[in-house]
Length: 250
Image (cartoon, rainbow, N blue to C red):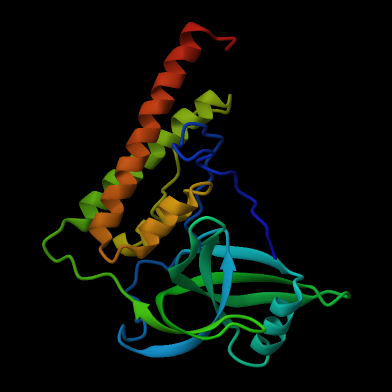
């Protein structure tokens, strides 16, 4: 496989101490409407695609498929429902149990039988049983949904997270010599839950943190964790900006 990204990573190190730039696009995420996901106790079979990245609901992921077993998977998907499970995997921690469905909405078969495709994140799932491992992974999964947070001011927390993101973008642009201007409307009419997924999708370069966010089943807890991460980043950027003011050539 080959994942293709057009936006720069927000975090370049495990401790988020090297920030390059952040481009936030919420237009691909669901608008402000209530989704109707499958029942959480429903179990289905799903082909799995382990990748060293995390896909969030609503996020767009371009992929180039050239490994033989996944070309086989693509041939099968093109004759079925064009959906597969993207699940985070790394050489040290292994493959995670929680992933996100990728729904293929654009694909192209190349002359050498490689595939270029663009998929969009849909439902989250938890693997309950591996059905087979060859020629590619197929598993039984249950769907995951966030638990209701009726006592939480989710809109207020989401607004605080958006404010932190705007501050991070502003300082990041300043450190990178870009024009400092007011950030755009980052929420784009998103409800708090899809907005929390959007925020998590911007934390490229920190897949373990992204995976932890994906696995949370509480919107408020996810937003608070993201707020903490953004504040830590903002503190670092503020310090770096102060150093740059004292030592302009550094």
